[in-house]
Image 1 (cartoon, helix red, strand yellow):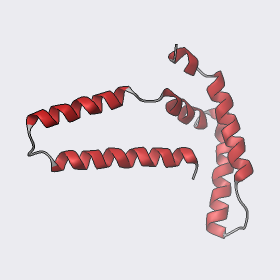
Image 2 (spheres, helix red, strand yellow):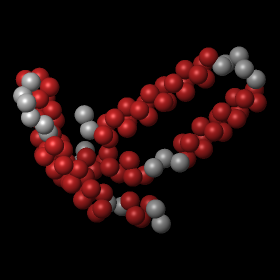
Image 3 (cartoon, one colour):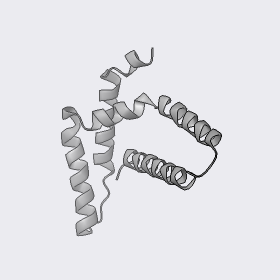
Length: 111
């Protein structure tokens, strides 16, 4: 699993925990709920466009071969117990992703 996948899983866990906390505090005061909603809105507005661009690039047509090779290597190592690591495949995927990000429209968004 790549570092990016770990970041996504962490973000999903944080959102789920926040939702559980909100459900537990439903009986709380209205002022607290309004403050929490404002904080969540602020957090939603501050999404990093680089993360979205990286995800788009990893799933793009240009990087599908590298992504497939990396996933196949991970499957081979995890299922068959082959004593190798997938570092070359991972770096190839990262290189493809970074080239795609650099040629993408990220800098137009960040003006």
